Amino acid sequence: MRFMANYDLMETIRNTNQWLGASALAMASYPAFSMFPNPALEWMGAWGEVTERTFGRMVVKPDWNIPAVVGPDGQDHVVNITCALKRPFGDLIHFEPQGMEQPKRKVLLFAPMSGHYATLLRSTVISLLPDCDVYITDWHNARDIPVSAGKFDVEDYTLYLVEFMRHLGPDTHVIAVCQPAPLALAATAYLAEEQPDAQPRSLTLIGGPIDPDATPTDVTDFGHRVTMGQLEQSMIQQVGFKFAGVGRKVYPGLLQLASFISMNSDTHRDAFVEQIQRVASKSSHEHDKHNKFYDEYLAVMDMPAEFYLSTVERIFKEREIARNVFEVKGRPVDIGKITTVSVMTVEGSKDDISAPGQCIAALDLLTGLPDAKKASHLEDGAGHYGIFAGGSWRNNIRPLVLDFIDASQDDATATPRRGAKKAANKNAAA
Image 1 (cartoon, rainbow, N blue to C red):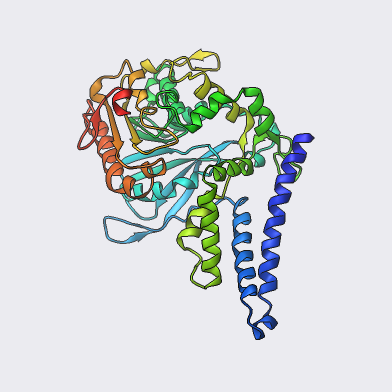
Image 2 (cartoon, rainbow, N blue to C red):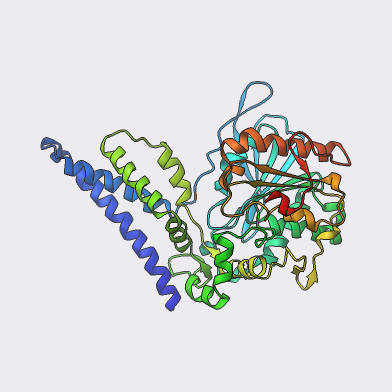
């Protein structure tokens, strides 16, 4: 109950701030006050509008808002979003433009389960839709999952990835972004031993912590500084009575958000002060740059406690993937068993979350894979988000990934094309 009380207290604080913002906006909007113009009322209303929106977004799952896709015929095709496979902790969803011939490239995006919803990859999906048949993992907010659904740790997560790949078949090209990269590698190795014919055609790992110690960052240092007992006591709470997952132990999204913001508190403070000024001066609008970014950034989800703790312990502390000693249900998963899947790694030179060297370490683990089926790319000047969204992704990385997919699809040797480089050791990449 102590942890339930903490969870409910955080929700109460959030709810109260949302209410205060709404109240301030409503009060400043009284028509009678317009007879006596007062800058203080303008500022109060602006503060209320920004505050209400800010705290309201924290408990709302963002919409995909995928625009129509322009097909080869030059016509706009509305995108249908359907559920291809439904599971308690996450669904496999499909983006299908109406009336457009299905592209030959079938791409499965493994979205992170790291505090934000899969919609964080919205721009990635939009950029791929004209050329690919796109699927994505849509993870659920743990607070909405009843305790009766059971636990969900890194092994369960890996088996979900295995099931999704089996469902889509061997002509699939997997792109794993950030957190799922090491488990995507493990899931592919699992299939290599259990059901080789179900392996994907190619696997692209983008900014993932395959070997967190290859190039230490603040994230990896934190994992080493604290004990598992300290993490469990300070980060884990039980979902309150307001939600379907009442009693489930989670790493709360609001607590994660507080950690995210504390890393760059001055930047976020200045951004909100400037937005209040813009609202007060009537120079803001619904879809301005601030709202577009923070509507997504502030929308956080709870993670199952066992998933968070097992990730820290097994991926970061024990480095089970990096040492190739990972097990699923007591059975060793040997990454060296991958012999036919083309693998490419993508890193950003300014990535301060998964620094260069952490992801390319995967290539050293692929001892059974010919060098011709390995490739790597280091994007100069790109940060963590830039390697899967923004200009670096659209202009440089996306074309390389599509070329790599085509190479693995058309050529049995999957020779890397254009700017993608053949396998290099992790130290050279760093």
